[in-house]
Image (tube, rainbow, N blue to C red; front, top):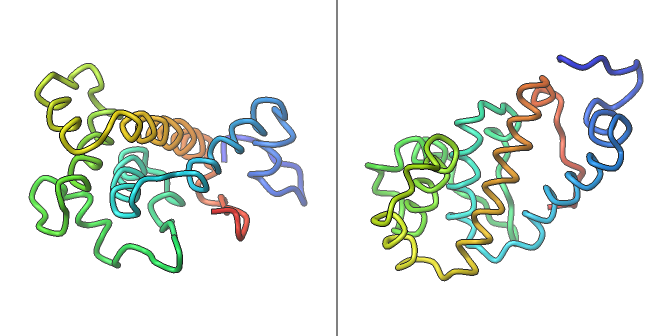
Length: 161
């Protein structure tokens, strides 16, 4: 870890809550709201989230699987996300979610008119804004946790997502 955490302190609670309580607490609330208040389908949500996790290199985020109403994506889903261009496991919305995540993280200046035509055909404007906010959360906070070495100790509280 890049941050010194006092003995006996939970690293996530210490860094996110005690070190910068104003910012960290607000960031944690936003991060959790992405899960609790999403209206996106589980597969498209997880495709975008996992693609960001893969790009960030966040160990915890790559291992995490969002559960919704007792359902999770299949065990081979992460591999399909890595191969979003060629997998036959995705419908158009799921493929677009993975593509958007990758382009958002690696080449946001390259989001051209052709992409937006395809995106707008599959998602309405509210869904595009929601997905974009999710991507921002995952990119920022997953990268923060990985860069600081928190991704090896990160645990979301039970019952929060």
